[in-house]
Length: 295
Image (cartoon, rainbow, N blue to C red; front, side, top):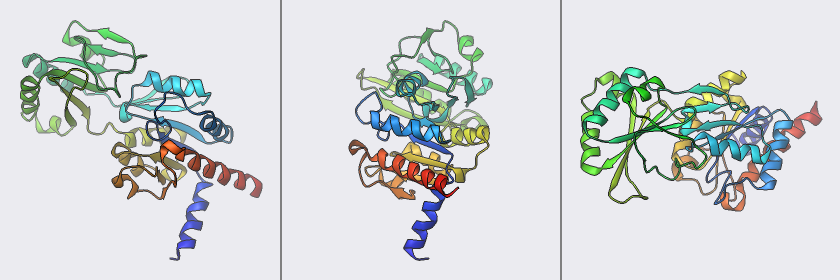
């Protein structure tokens, strides 16, 4: 198929887009905590033209919601890398929660290895003690609540667990996870990282394997009655790969990781720091303006 024909077909598909899902840090935002006026204006214009907007991030919900409010954009919020989905009014519409039995097993093991733990729910960060979170999870707007007993966690099945402690304790805990029933172990995704804010402390971050941006995107499509073909995804990092798999048009920033760029239908000519996101928004606005004139 000639290259010009492929481009024409892709351009036509932009007129079908009714849902834009964009990563936040490194895509919509670069080095700041507020959307630029030009980006906010374009997002508002898309919303007014019938295109739903969603912000997708590994961050917790509160700061993302404030970002949308300050910009005046009625955005859906996909937070904690897809574990939670809030509608523009702030109502939870999807939550990838841990099954209570699995959660109980995890907490029992953590207690055995004397590890403090914390869990994100739809409303609050529950914690047994002060947990040193990685920067992308440490939201100053997030309410924190001290839980005294293990049942406090099980009563509100969590969307994400973070365990913090000395390395030998954490690694012993991680090895013990291999002894969980196979059906439970296969549900988990585990990452072990050294704490930057507190040297000598190790963090084990545990998620449900299916709690990712792609899962939340599909839940949002179902809620809106839209197909993947009507959805455009924009991103810059590996955690956007599941999002790309759920969407019909995939756009990577010019400075995105190579793995994501290889999956993209289109790559911006400018990196995020040079307002590459504006290229995407302008192209989508132009496609819809052209469709309106044709009608």
